[in-house]
Image 1: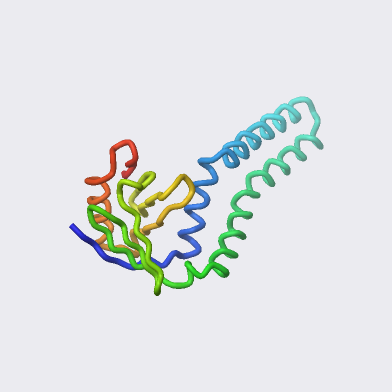
Image 2: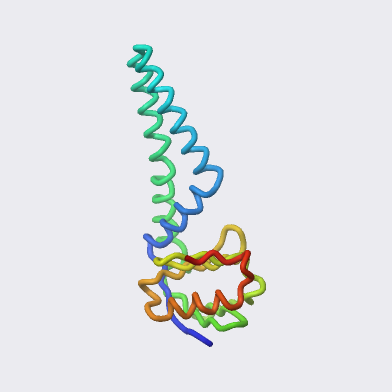
Length: 165
């Protein structure tokens, strides 16, 4: 089986990918834990009658929770504007042996046996070439090819590297 399609990564696609990666990583987990700790401190402060400190804890907690998404949003906007890779669509050719990606004169191949992992849900498939970098394949752009990519990945990727819902 072979499939061909084009993907143009949008700001929304890249932001969702980065948010998912951030909150699965240590920065996201620590920010959530810190927010919970600040909320608990605020509740304790209110119970003791320390309203000023409680309000301060709440404000700092909100800043902590808003910082990661806002900083990622800014980075994504900059990357989309300045990185040539995101200005034009990527052309994919996927079969049971290799993932071929091209853009203009540039071409790259990633054999399936070198894929780090494949994750997917009903909105997108992520094919990771390493722990941090992935090809983002949004369902809305792939259409009918989306199920073909899922099928190929399910056939060729080892089960422990495959997390497709």
